[in-house]
Image (cartoon, rainbow, N blue to C red):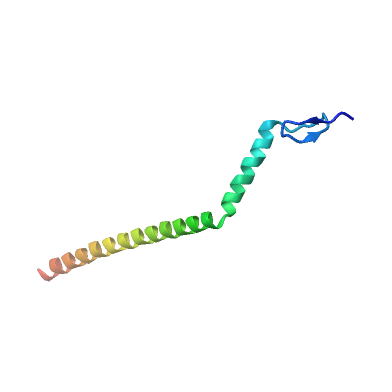
Length: 85
């Protein structure tokens, strides 16, 4: 049997079906998986998610406070208009 070097550098038989593109994609996927599983990346992602959640809650509370102030002013105006009678 005649062994040759395949596109990905390993000595195999001539029926190798993996192209250079497939090998590169597998390597890229492995690197991405390693990065996603790294503690540094997880620390950054968790911190970012907490920051986004906190920002969302803060903005939601600001909106509720503005609506409350608007309602309070409307009630004060209503009481003034009723007391004039």
